[in-house]
Image (cartoon, rainbow, N blue to C red; front, side):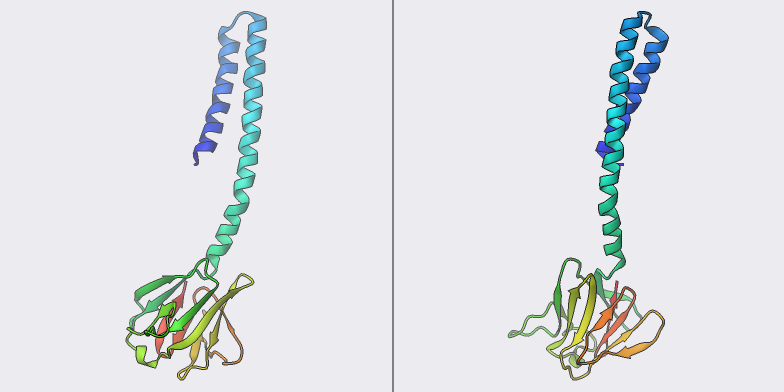
Length: 180
């Protein structure tokens, strides 16, 4: 619970307590009515603020949950499918996958992996468009395959990008990357 919501609840509770205590202990009718009016107004105001604040905060949280459903990281897997390295790709729009050299920088460097020799300098590119990641083969020697959640493995065409979804395994040469 955030601080603002806690403060709203405390003011509402305090207002109700003032109303109850006024009813029980204040004998003068005008003073009691004044306390009812002030406490009731405070209660209504902070109750409405708590509801409006909850509605405003609800919308971004839903968007955040939707974004988390998609791919937010690529994880390098070893032969036993254990995570070796992870690259956070959330907030990026395009990532070059390959082997880092002095002449060419790549975003996801697979040079020092077990099968790094089968990865071209510029092997593939991941592009984020319309809320979805797509992988493209950059005319690589050993190609790209993608294993979907159903277990089927597909060869990525050199002429058409392929959608990458959470749970997919990308084979860059023989190097495995999990889309998480």
